[in-house]
Length: 390
Length: 193
Image (cartoon, rainbow over all chains, first blue to last red; front, side, top):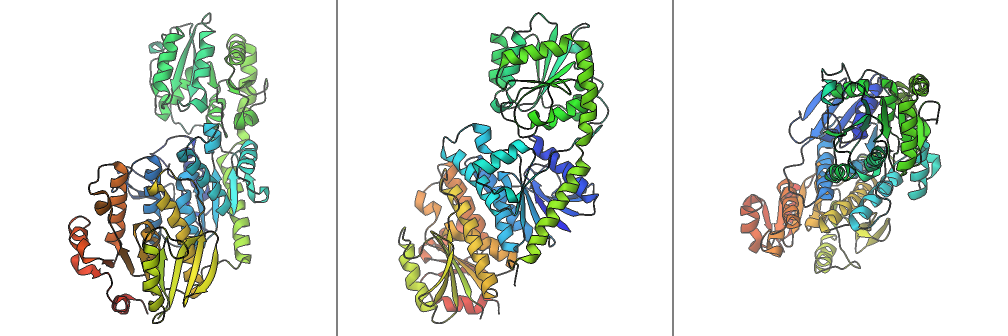
């Protein structure tokens, strides 16, 4: 079976969880003897073609044209992807990840008359909360179009299935839930950093990993931190985003700037070190389709405190393999973070159970379920009359 | 000869500017001499036989676009759907002929994926319309026009645009065919048989 997978993110270009998802799922599909070609983006700093773990990677550089905004940039990338696909060996099926490459997937579906599978990692309506202008409506309609054209729509959680089914009127008969996987040790050996540069002996570290955008709720963590000044805690904020200047200012206004380190993007080995050092990881998302970072923290052996929303709400069982708090409530987060930091027995209990919990999330089983979706779609395709005739 | 595949964003009864009527005046007599399939945007996906042509109508999937450049891109995905349908249901095409920049992209995709010669008719250019590329949107449209025109085997244009097409858009003067000329000459030379 030959699959053309289209994603705007693929290593080394990683923005969020999507790039890591595509990297792991494609690698695991190849291990099941599926021939995978990935069509993705490059800014010119990565090879235009290479083989990674048996996956054929074709990268498109869109900077031969000028664009007025991000939407046009994404359309330009897709335009060049559609043209480049004419040089790619024939494929049986197209698999698109998110709206950013919906354009290329839909166009190629009709040009090649091959079935389309879509994975929806998040939605514009979920990210924004409402659609307030033509940019947001354009993206929302592209998402709808992708789910309309797809023969099967894969979501990473039951929460996302309900969201896509409800907001896009996508029939549940053609939807599947396949969770992301977790690969222990994928971050490599910890980096030789010096803990004293971040916290003195006796001070504990609390870790946040995620983009610094409103929907991830980093401001909720800072508000909770300001209510836990009586504890000797330091906060490591890993990740970057448009909210960073606001968060830096907020930490000053809350009187906790001495306790908070904004670390920006870090390497996997540096992140492994931060996991080793930390006494808790907090994921305060207001919107979270899955929450792959929570799995990483659980696998790394630190207790997690997550907001009870989206995929996080499905991964974590409160008081068993982590603690949950009310989304958007810094008081609720304060209460739970205080518990996990001050109660060693509770922390150990959560960590032990979390390590067992993450075992059921493997990329191998995600790939097996994805392969089953491919077979189901190809079976429907074989029975249909919609085929190339030239 | 297999049908010549025309792609446009307007054709009667869909009239935006003068292109629609001009196209009808050109295509109706042409369809008496060569088989013509026409792909055009409409309110729903359907196929009709009108004026001796087979018309493949496509509905617009996206209703909201922040500007004309984004509109053009998503419109062309719909046009590609119609063009592919025309090719698969008619047993192929001998050549793709697009009208105006706003529907040229679909022709570029069809041409590159089905290995078909590409003809683009230019009615005006962004440089002529805006006089200078003073905004990023204008630059984006100009770059898209240039991108498509460089992929065309033949560019049909008013000869008053020829110098600009050559100088500003990099079109080889030998590939420019005068608008209003006998298109059969172009088709007889370039069409796949």
